[in-house]
Image (tube, rainbow, N blue to C red):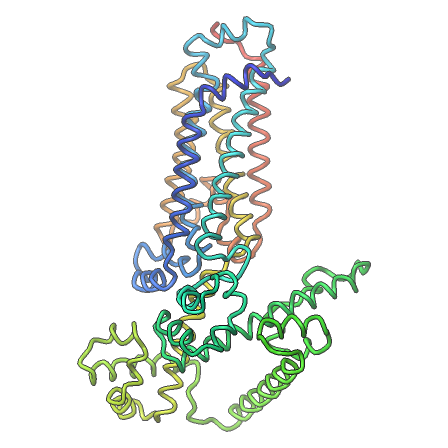
Length: 489
């Protein structure tokens, strides 16, 4: 079935377009990753809320969410351009020009010709998107170190210069920053925070990292325990960082988990045990306070009114410092200025400690949001990449089918190119409109590649299966049609 000469000829005819599209797609995806500004995009998305562009920008609060626009639009249109013109060149263009007659006059069977050409198109698309995906992985790893480790943020970059340590090493040993006063000052300045807020932030990050490492150990131990238990699902066995944050006592039952957590904190195992005991006590006290608050309402700052109070503090601070609110919002340390504090206390009836606590909480929360935005989930990235690949294969099957069905390039290009480009235009409309008509979902196969569900870890598998089925059926039909049809030779 496979013909090596036909395959070589297909490569020779189409490699330039393949190389151009592959390079362009790789550069654009890498640019999306390298140029990602977590804090900046969050501000843009907030400003665009309620506009026609809100649906396009709403996902930009994370690195992988930001890539959604590449997978839904740019990666899609580049793939369409390649498969439409390549499918046309492989079959109908040769039939139309008469060169197919020469090919079929050789001992090579017609079935071998069409099978090899369809195989070339499929393999070239697969290779293209494998390279593009690897380029994205490489760009993210080089820029943020977040594929194989913890993200490298501005404070780590600055502290690594002060401590003369590699950024990758320091991201896994953050306690070295905490133990050096100058590194703390430099790192805090890099994150637009004062020492007080940065110390709280760094302590939280180190604690979460220690829980994350401990969670991996505990999960591995549980996998060994429940290896032969068919009733235990992977989700039941896995222990997450969030579970340990809520119940750190689980770490005390595993010596290896204690060692892993202590290593991240840069302390001994006994010191880490005491740290966990203090955390457990603090969580119990917090729970008691919550229960007490339900029965006896207090004037404490709650999550519901914190945002409104913070804005009032920002506005009053800006007025006192003869600045605009945007300047203070961008640099919340200004709230702690004595003049600003005095004005804020009068405007909100909060005391000095409450305002400083609020400012620290806001700075820490903002920094943690940036950290979370830079996290890289390799499983999600894999499904995004695989989903786009399967979608392009399904679209390529439409173009290839048209190329085998018709004998004139113009008609084949109109159908085989018009349908995929119509799919793309409908996708753009859906992306730009918050309230796009539901019927549009049924007019394009691109909706079977549900990036929202992939990013949210929802149900998306059946859509990819449907796309794969479309590709298989149309490629198989193309081979049958070309083998049996009468050609104008």
